Image (cartoon, rainbow, N blue to C red; front, side, top):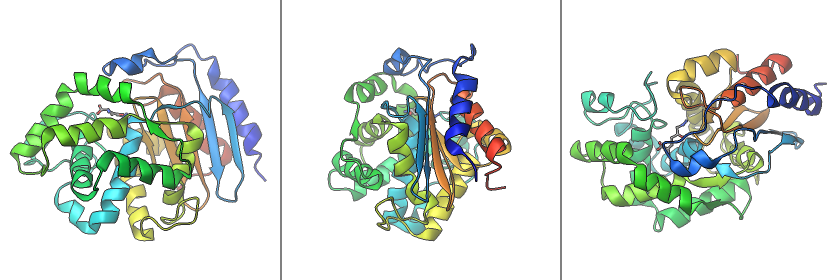
Amino acid sequence: MLDFNTIINNIHNNLKDNVVKGVVASYIPELSKQDVNQFGIYMQHMDGRSFMVGDAEVPFSIQSISKVLSLSKAIAFENNDIWKRVDVEPSGNPFNHLSLLELENGIPRNPLINAGAIVVADILCSKFENPKADFLQFVRDIANDQTIDYNYKVAESERKTGYNNYAAANLLKSFNNLNNNVEDVMDFYFHQCALEMTCSQLAKAFYLFANKGKCINNKQHISSSQAKRINAIMLTCGFYDESGEFAFEVGLPGKSGVGGGIVALLPNHFIISTWCPGLNVKGNSLIGMQALEQFTTQTNLSIF
Ligand code: DON
């Protein structure tokens, strides 16, 4: 039997003193304050065991990881209608790239790049009665943790510097692919990205994707087929123009955020999350990717 505790402790030890840790995101000024040396790993096994090491219980800005949570709620509301407004192809481009959006008539390549997540945010703004409060409640429910909250300073920091995201939203609006006001959708989007969670809370929140749509409390939030599709999108699009590399090195569906978090999962087996704020040039956690590569190599647990 695999000794997950020793495996994740060894990986943490191997990587924690690396001199090359990547660069903390600075385009969102609040995120540039993060300490590049923080590093946590949390693994939630579906047999009920969990393992953690380092800063696994320190809250951080989940950023784009939230796009998977908003997508799952939008799919629960809309089912297949969502695919009329956003595609499911990898973009091969950075997360904030805009030129394809214009070439492709305002239909974002996938729901995990910023433009796609803004369409998803628009859907939630239409469907929820109180979008920010209702989305927060959904996240608290699936993670089984009522203490999760937005970091309002981070949301404000994003809003103040969000010219690229406003450009995406305006382009979407010009192609009739945004139903609500740009300002309302962006307010929701900046808050969802500013959700603050720990590795432990994230692994629990992602339990439903490994468990055919049922959360850690055994409540069905999305269908098994919807969970399968969300995993497929994470695998092909979760790391933007580094999705191929993540599949190649790690071999799990997963999602990254510019706060330095990554969550990945093996359906029916486990969910694993890492946090180390230094990013590589593609905007994904440098040490987090290495940790997950070592984990799937040493355990031989991947979808392939
Ligand atoms: O909209 C943005 O640019 C950020 N709130 C989220 C980007 C992000 O996390 C990209 N992921 N690696």
